Amino acid sequence: MLKKRAFALILLMLFLLASCSREEKKIRDPFESIKSKLSKMESYTAEATVELYHNKFDTSFTVFQFYSKGKFRLEVFEKEEQPDKIVVYDGKRSYVYFRKVDQIFVAENEKEIPLFSMISSFAKNYFEAGGEIEKKVSDNSYLVTVPIPERNVVMYKEEMIFSKKDLIPVELRIFDINNELFAKITYKDFQYNLKLQDDLFSEGTIKESMR
Image (cartoon, rainbow, N blue to C red; front, side, top):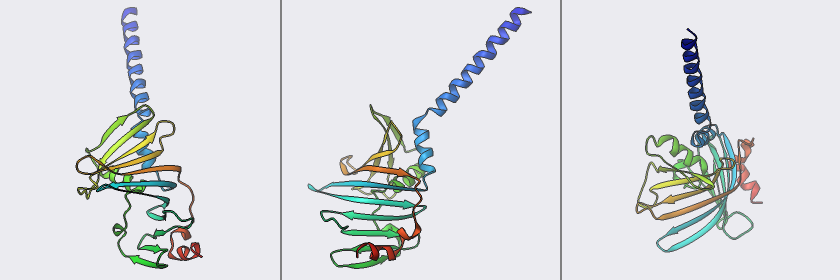
C-alpha cells in the first residue's frame, strides 16, 4: 500500500514538474513576447536612419516617425535642419509637404506613400505572414523574417532585428528577390505606447511646423 502511494506521489510530482517546465518554456519564448508586444502597440515614436542600396546608387536620410492607432507622421531630413518632406496620414488621407516647392499634396490612398521604414508596416506584414516566418537567434538579437505581401523584385522580404535586452526593434533589413540588401533602417530612441496628440496627425500642423 505504501509502495503504491509512493509511486502515485512520484507520478504526481513528475506531472507537476513537466507542467511547470512547459509553462516556463511558454513564458520565456522571446518570439511570442515580441509578437505580443507588437500586437499591443497602439503608438510609437522613433528616429530612423534609412540607407538604400539599389543599382549601385546608395542614398541615406533620417526619418522621425510618429504612429498612433493607424495614423502616422513622417518627417524626412536629408541635410538641412528643417525637414525636406513631411508625410501625415490622418486615417483618411495622406498629406505630403515638400519644402523645396513649399506645397502640400493630397493622396487619397495611404498606399501611395512608401511606408517600408515603419515598424507598424512590419508588424502588419508579420501578423499576415501565416507560416512564412523565419526566426533566428544571434548573440545579441532575435531576428524575424517575413515576406512582403505585395512583393516585387526590389522589395521581396524583410527582416526585423530585436534587442535581446528589452525586445525592442533596432534594425530592419529589406531584401530583393535575389536576397541582396535593398534597404537598412536603423532605429534609435524607440518608445512604445506614448500618448500622442491627434493634432500631430493633421494637415494643419504641417504648415505650423514649417513657419
